[in-house]
Every structure is written in C-alpha cells, then in structure tokens.
Length: 119
Image (tube, rainbow, N blue to C red; front, side):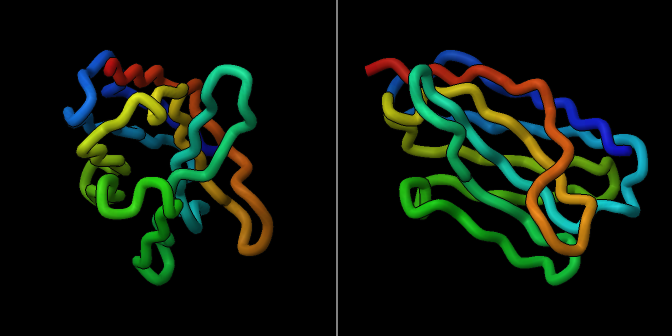
C-alpha cells in the first residue's frame, strides 16, 4: 500500500505561481506512475498531469501545457507540480495519485490540497 500526502496549496493572484508537493511512503517499489488531478466545485475530477516511473516520461493536460510541469525527486521521494501563470479557472482541490498496477488506472490517492487563484 502507498500513502500520499499533498502540500503547497494556497491562495495566489492570477499570474502567480505555486508548487505542489506529493510525499510518498509505503510500498514505493510498487509505483508505476504518479499523477495529479483536480476537482473544481460542481465539476468532475479531471486529469492534470502524470509522471511515468518506468519510462520517465511526463504527460500534461492541454489546459495546463506550457504553464505546469511535473518533476520527481528520487531521494525524498516526492513528486512536484510546478504551476506558473495561474488562472482563476485553475482553482480547485488538487489530488496526488499513484498507479501501483501495470495496467489500469490510479489506485492510491492523497487527501487533496486547495488551490485558489484570485482575479
């Protein structure tokens, strides 16, 4: 089992930046990929980005490409979501997730961290 704890959320003005962190613990060797998702009030949870631990590739939603980046610190181990040029529509609860199966979706989730972007 994998435990995930997000941090770094907060209130920022439009155009500003935040860096979210996802600290991991537990059966880390079982993680194939990690991702970030977000859910705004009244909306469904949506994919933001992911980091493939096997191939080292990253993927980002079109809505955040060019503004957000995903990185990993193997030593800690922690996954980061650097968010630049934030927009009010980025306001949401951001969740970190891990995929511990070769095939299938993300199956371990953090508790979420609130990001609020004011106009």
